[in-house]
Image (tube, rainbow, N blue to C red; front, side, top):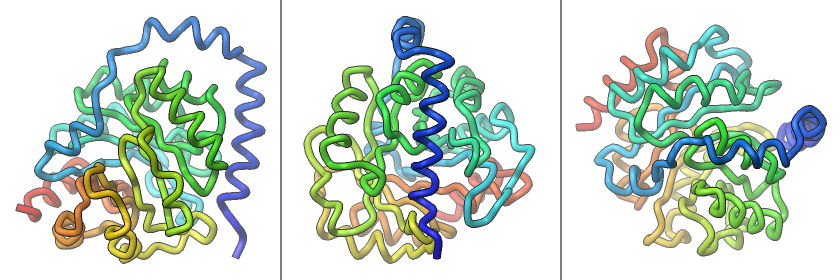
Length: 260
């Protein structure tokens, strides 16, 4: 099985390098003052009865196109209206069919927090996230050296962005520290893209219970969410289950009703 994560990160380095040549980091820094006031994703999840993070994504490396013509202007407000606690918006173009424009389009239309979901490897991407109106960023342990992850978390905080750290196994527990606002367990192996929700349950007992814990990927029914909540999770990232349907907002509404 090809290591998809390595391929994505190699492409991301190339992509960020091109972006830096087009717009310097100094130019990005100048645009920071115009960015919207951030909302706390951590608080939104901690205080929510459902904790659903509804995801906007058009495709995935393993499934191909899910909804190629999806528009954030339509789907994101429908997520908020249905009762999502927060939003996750994919901004990787090559592998997920997204862009920063998707966050920029969605931000004025909703009041709930937005996570920039991407493969963050450089502080340049943190400035981008801030400028388009993201409230939080994803840092993936499997994609970063520990020191680099800490540096990026610190920089994110200096820009007023919260950090969702994504781990996948016990070896990555060392990445957890006070700089991390939320801890995500990815149920999808980023090397093979094999998904197993039991991964969240396996790691739950080893995670600090005073943290806001998020289970990501493979959550397809309300009963799983109830079990995960009992195990200590407060955030539940759901993408494909919603995006593969004709009306993702309605699907989310029905999902939340079934949780009650």
